[in-house]
Each structure stands twice: as C-alpha cells, then as structure tokens.
Image 1 (spheres, rainbow, N blue to C red):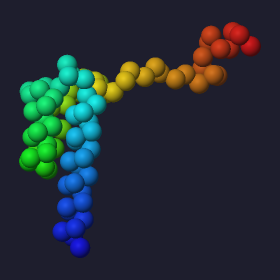
Image 2 (tube, rainbow, N blue to C red; image 1 turned 90 degrees about the vertical axis):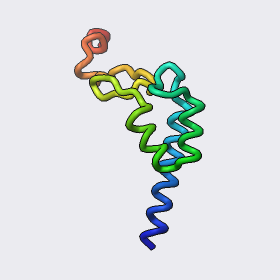
Image 3 (cartoon, one colour; image 1 turned 180 degrees about the vertical axis):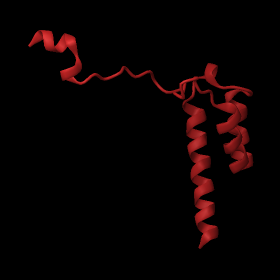
Image 4 (cartoon, one colour; image 1 turned 45 degrees about the vertical axis):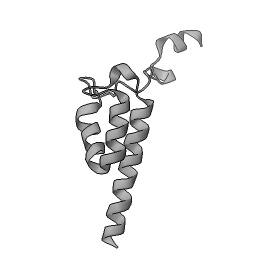
Amino acid sequence: MFDVLLAVTFFAVQIYALFDVAKSPEGSIRTLPKWAWIVLIIFFGAIGSVAWFIAGRTVRPNGVQRNRPNSRKIIPPDDNDEFLRKI
C-alpha cells in the first residue's frame, strides 16, 4: 500500500512540475531552457521535478513566484479612503 501511495505522489509531483514549466515564461526560467526542463522531468521523473523546483524556478526576494500574474492588493472597503469618500 505504501508503494502505491509513494508512486502516486511522485507521479503527481511530476505532473505538477510539467505544468509549472509549461506555463512559466521563457525569461523567468533559470539554468536551462524550457524544453530541456520538460525533457528532464519526463525522463528523470522525481529527480527532474525536484531539480526544477530547486534550480529552475525563480523566486522574488519576498517569496512571491515570478511566473505568477501580479495581483493587486485588495483593500477592504472600510480601509479604502477613496471608497469612503464616495459614500
């Protein structure tokens, strides 16, 4: 049973890494080109996936992923001065 759970976990990590590489912009990937990371993950499975998370992804100093869309900070209405002025 443990073997099956371990295999499913490694497969899930590999699929997640493949999708993460595929959606990452080419300019935000470190060390290797995008196609090389995809090949590495497909042929080396868990080792390639762990290598991607350690050496391929780029992280901003504040911990936010660079390949994620920039989100605007949401301010609740009671803290938003502009909203309160309109009332």
